[in-house]
Length: 382
Figure 1: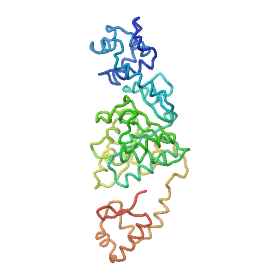
Figure 2: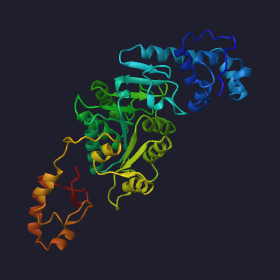
Figure 3: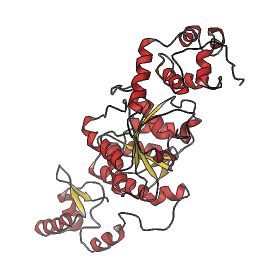
C-alpha cells in the first residue's frame, strides 16, 4: 500500500516522534489496529499529524480525520508531558516501534501497541520467551506446577511471561525468579497503567521482579485502573511476546483460554497440562488438548517441542527417586492423583484402619501425599 506524503501542515506541539507516538496512543476512539493502519500509510507519526483532513479521510472516517488534523488538545498535551516525565526516571522507558528496544515479537502484529511503558530490565525482551497462564483460583497442585515449570524453563534461559494476576500467574513469576540470577527471569504484562499494580497484594512481587532483573510492561496510560475490558487486551501481549503459551488449570470460559486462542491466531505454540478428570479446572486444558494443543507433563516436553532441549539436570528433578522410595509403600499403588477417602483406601488395600493411619502419616510427613481440606488424600505433585 502506498504511503502518504507530507502536506506541509505542522502541529507545533509535536516536536519529536516520541510526542507523536504518545499522542496517537492517547487519541480517543483510535485503538491499536487503526493506529497501526495509519502508521503504515505515513513515513513516520509526525507526517501523520502533518496530513490534511482530506488525506486522512482516505484512511479513517471523517470525524477521526478532523480529530487527527487539529492541534494537540490540552488534555492530550498534559498526558504526553506526564508520560515523558515518568520516563525520565531511572529504570523507566517508553518504547515505540521506531526503537530497537521495542519487542520484535510484537512489531509486525496488526494490533501492536503504539507505546509500551517499561519498568526494569529491557534486555528481557530480547530473550526467548514462554507464557504461563491459568486460573486465579488454583489448587495447591496447580501452584506447584506453575512454579516448577517456570523455574525449570527460566533455568533453561526461557523468559517466563505472565500477567501478574493472582494464582497461576503469580506462581509462574515467582518460579522464574526462584531459578536464580543467572536464569532468564520474567516479564509481567499489566492490565493497568504501569504505575498501578493490580492486585495491590502483588506490589511486593512487582518490586521483586524489577529488583531481580525482570521487567514490567504495560500499554495503558499512567493512572489507568483495573478496567475489565483491559485484561483481554493485556492477554494478547502475553501471547504475542512469546514463542508459546502453557495453560495450567483453567475453566472452559476463562482469560487463559482467550490467551491460548490469541496465541494460535498469532501462530504461536499452545501447551496444556492435563489434570484430574473430576476437576473443573482441568476442563480448559483438556479442551485445548482436544483441539490440538500439545499435552505436556514436564518442562522437557516444551523445550523439545521448541527445539531448545539440551540434556541437563533440570531443577526439581528427583521424582524418580522419590517414587522409587515410596513405591514399596503398601498404599502407594492404591492412592492416585485424584483425591480419595481413607475408607476407599481401606477397601482397596484391605489394611486395618490403625495400620493405614500410620502409613499415611509417614507418607504425609515425608511430603509424598497431601491431605485436602475435606480430609481426602492424593499423591503430591511436584
